[in-house]
Amino acid sequence: MNDTSDYWQTLGQLIRQNGVIIDRPKGSAHPRFPDRIYPINYGYIPGTSSADGEGIDVFMGTKSEESIQGIICTFDDMKRDAEIKVLYRCTEAEIQTASRLLSYPPMHSLLILRDRTS
Image (cartoon, rainbow, N blue to C red; front, side, top):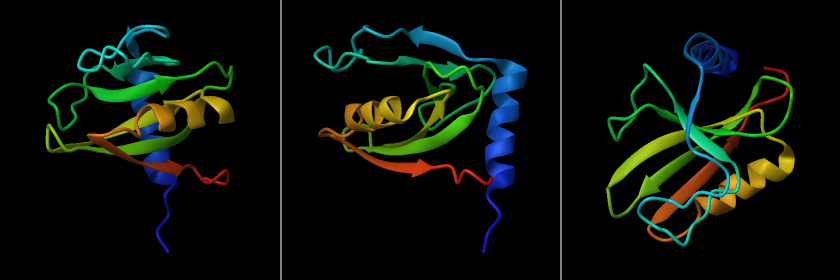
C-alpha cells in the first residue's frame, strides 16, 4: 500500500511557503462559463504550474484550520487537459459544493478526499 501522507504534506508545504492568490472570489463568474458562479474563493498557488500553464488551482474554504481536505481531479473535453484543484480549509459542505461546480459538460471531475490519518 502506498503512503499518501508525503503527497499531502508536500502540497501543504507549497501553500505555506507560497501562499494562495484568490483571483476568483466567491460570487464571481467563471471566465469561460459566465453562468457558473464561484460559491467558494478560488485561486492558485504562485510559483507552481499546472496543465494549463498557470499555478495549481485551489478552492479556499472558510475553516480556520489550515489543512488540505483533498483534491478534485478534472478533465476538460474542450481543452483536452487534466488538472487538480486543491481543497484547502474547506468544510464538508464546501467540498461538495466545489465538486458539483466542476461536474458539468464539458468538465468531468473526480473527488479524492484526504484520509484523516495522513
